[in-house]
Length: 183
Image 1 (cartoon, rainbow, N blue to C red):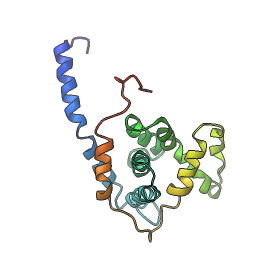
Image 2: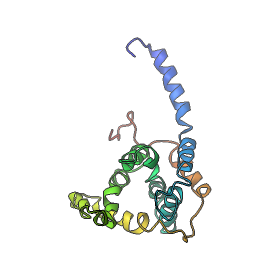
Image 3: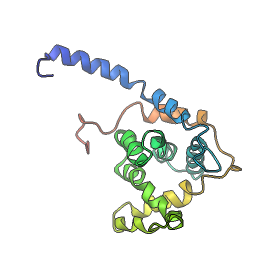
Image 4: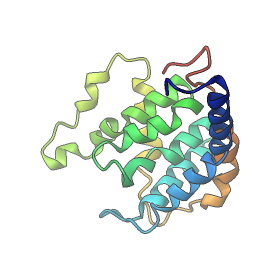
């Protein structure tokens, strides 16, 4: 890297911008990997993600929130023990601090509904009580995430959400090179 010239780095930057244009397609392709993976649930992971997004969409949540609902579990295939961190990392350049925090912390908040059934502390989320986005995240889990394992729910297909993914992931709001970056 230290041997590179300004022209070299300009060429790399141009190539990176071209590669970045394909991010929405890669995200959609990765969502499809969740299809057929039930993990013991009544619906597969793709259906769960689609149901969560469908519920948020039908509740008139804004596009960014719906995107977060759709992608909140996208990390399941690669991060079985920290899927929320993967989803949050993917979303971070494109969403508000509030929505990023919600996705990043949703797993421990979701635990409120089942941790006690496994012998764990269902109130583990209380470590975040007092944080500005606590109630926001608790509501996400209660209203959208935890009820979205319903095999009978009328779920919108992935194709319905593709334009949203393409639109919101076309240009990041926060990057290493923007003044409002929280990187």
